[in-house]
Image (cartoon, rainbow, N blue to C red; front, side, top):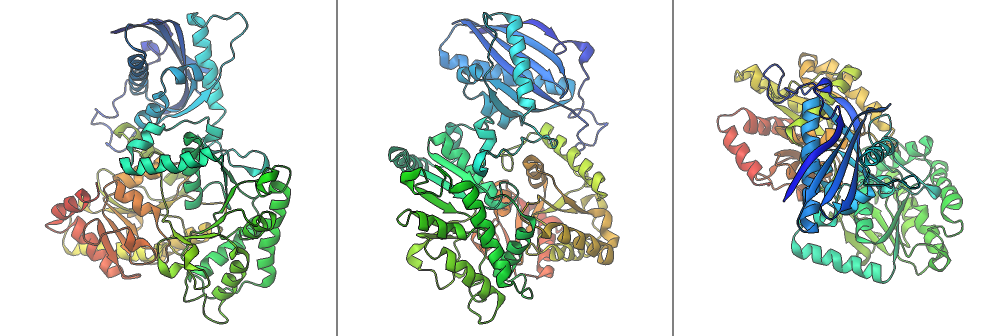
Length: 625
């Protein structure tokens, strides 16, 4: 039993502040256009005066000042469990109604800790239902203040709205937070709460969850401190995995930390050259011994400055160091050597996340052999060598008894993978159009026309020239069969950047030049755009695509394929690296030989423009869900 009333309000209920939303209902807007929503932040606070009487404070902040507020007084006579659910339901419904009535996009919401304790599922619901980043804050009330005072709970809500605002940067994303010793403080040191353990448990089979609880329980019982090292805190697949695993392990109560070195662009140029050489993408560059030594000097200087000081993670465990070390990048091989020098018996895990061409590293005199030999000299003492589950990715020098297989993983609960409702999808497509205009790129006209997507970094291994050539051939097939313009898919090629990837700008500009030179007649229908750090924008693009491409020439294990399949999208991908392990040919997608653009065009035609395309598409999509 529950009842509620607004104790006092301004704007949140006042018609004077209201602009009526017609985004979803009116025919005046293209359905996918969205609208220019005002971006705001919210604060939420709770006052429990007694078992049956409590108040919820709401406050809106536009980035400069508080623009709106209200307090709802609720009566409740039932169990505490029901009360928690009722609080959550009331807030979610109130906020959803408000955003649609006032045409606002609530970027973040400060949630007072008292409210989080009373409604532990609220933050998860704000994230998954309303696409709002919830942040937790403790409000210190003035001496003598009464939480049951309606005006006081109003002030608390405004306070946590201001606190939440400070976590976000100019891109309207939570700031990346690094603390002392360059430790990556994931989710702003846990202040951003987007999931609960119940959410994770529901995402896997019961047997998997029991196994996870067993092993994390052992780690907690033995008080094991596990430390990860990687080159960058954001941008690439390694960083994506580390954010996810640290978030999860913290929720499980496991002591886990993640450190990154201080970046140096000149070093990242060398390490990216090594990356390309080991994958066989670059067979002409020859890296000098001096350049290789520069990498190791850089790693050693970071270790000395940040991680070998008192209680530093690389010190022996009995001196405050970690119990287990995970070196997650070929950029940091020196750390394996240093960790073993400090504590020879401490387990050290090296994870190789790229396709290492075992045939090239065995060729005498090749650049690949030179790079690999230098790398192997520093990682050979690792107790475990983790590789993508492809035998040819493991060079013969590695003892197979030490090898563990682990594909790239992704978090189904994060911004790249969660389900977006129509309202939020429209917002992100509006953001995409703004980004395209800022970069002078063509624009999608979805949903008036479907589109094909490749979401990947602008990297020489991602096969972007093959994507463009395949699309051109497919468009020729559309012309030959007189497909109506409104049924002809556009193409979007987009992706995030990474601080350790200096190739991105070069490949982007090379792709732009290629379109001008060879595909100018299709220029209006090819959207080539660099996306900022918005996971939900990439989520919206993949979720609304008709077909997803991944035409990599070299690939370890492409996580974007997993994400697309999870969304029920047919994927056409190259038969290279670990990709054949991800796609069931003819069921969840199609595998084509590397560089076979005719085959890609044929498969696109099968799925999109032939007479039985709808039936094939529906069957393939159904196989993935």
